[in-house]
Image (cartoon, rainbow, N blue to C red; front, top):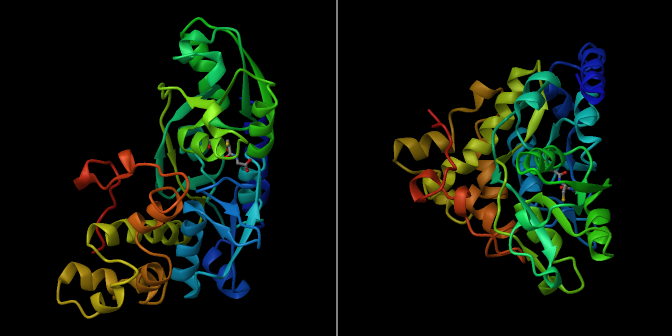
Length: 333
Ligand SMILES: N[C@@H](CCC(=O)N[C@@H](CS)C(=O)NCC(=O)O)C(=O)O
């Protein structure tokens, strides 16, 4: 067992007895949701110049605050590095983690944590300086690689190079800001991270066009919100807050029309609009509050990482299951 895993387990065990099992009660009492996010990654979770956080992960936190507290603004964002994120959740420092975190067996089963769904299907990619003239990662045997510590990115990189009989030298950083600066300063031949993040990082370069994203995608990175094990009610609340946004998109319920949909005669729409709160320990307005204050999944995607954002990422895998993608939520009934 790896040292970090043993540490994680030990912390999970110590805190399991101290952390109140009812996160819902804690959040209601505090009047604010403590959500763990990145230290700053455009499109996912980043503070603007006035300190206002935006991003698809930020909106996932806001959806839970809207469901639980009736107010999407009642979130305290806690910036965390990749290395810090699981300990912060295990220790009770945050109520949920929403920080481009990949769902893996090890994280789900041995850290005392539960993944509550997927809010972005990603995969690991590579970015190189255009002047290297490289077309594929397979041309990069012996390369120095800028990478962030405590990520699946590190593990996949080692797997891929081993499987292709190639060598690399990892140049490791703690934050994405340091990683991109290292790349820009020429400390490495390439930078690797989740593909979505490559686009987010590329626009931070003084000359974004001098860097190219290579075609290879070497892993599956299903990213989603995470909670502590041992609190099924809270697990359900986070899970169904996300599911409500995905179902709303599928049913054509948007921030703009949700008010009219409230009186809809369509049974499925009526169910999403009310009557299910008690099962989650919430007010019946939970899902209405999410959609009216945060929006449906398609809306948060487009605003943060899609057409309405500088990243301009296509829906791709993140399109709904009936629109060519794999984004799929169980029904609300
Ligand atoms: N999805 C991967 C990678 C997540 C990750 O932390 N990626 C970096 C690479 S850019 C990041 O988001 N950093 C943001 C920060 O430094 O706060 C994981 O869960 O391990």
